[in-house]
Image (cartoon, rainbow, N blue to C red; front, side):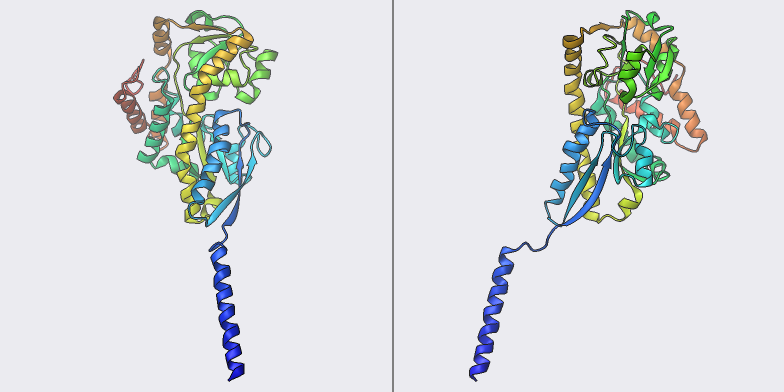
Length: 362
């Protein structure tokens, strides 16, 4: 009997100890998932600063609500894993699990995102442009199907351009002064300057400073924040504002194979962090627009000129029917180009934007 009593006492003490220990330990340790986020651009680029500073912490903050998972982020930005323009292939092949794709550089592969570039002189409201792009993604599943061809799942769009302007080594006073100049621009912007009589040179922000300095081109279509952040106004200190407008240009994507292997809770956290990334991207652009121009004026003596309303109207009119041609080309490929264009312009008109040309009509 004595031995049985001792055994029962030991078991009881052990049970109490286990309960006490359980009370001070977490119910379960968070499972760590390693993800690599990539971009050829540095955090000085608004969309990447927001990617690193807001999106990545935002995902972990969302996951911390349950404590089941956390992400160990490998920040493969600034060209450490892929160079500018290499993000699409990098996410496709799995060099990166998550990446910000510059859709503006891949109009041949993801053409539906090109609608904003085919409708210049329409709006300078970047928030509206991003919201409208997201609306198009919801209305037309062809957006997602297009990304799937490149082994990717898109989480949401963003942009960095509140209003494209023309920056130059020598002053431009009026529309006719553009004729004959060499103008650097992203591919979708080239038709804008070609219509004005310029020779368009395809380029990107990473190469722009050297190209302007060495004379590969002497003028560039770029927005105020980028001109200041990348010091493009040093070699090109003159700027003329023609209300070319805002565009989308980025999509935050996940490698499709990576996506398939993620728990549902992590997928939801990635989606939940998108609005904050979009807002931070836009806030950085809007804040940097005034700051970028102020920096250019202060440090490099930038001279700002506003193009006359008559010249702006003439520039919009002299462009070919970019949007209708684009829509027809998409229709031929079995994509809803005409429907997207109409939905896009309807949304702009419904929001009382200063539409210079009804691109879905002419």
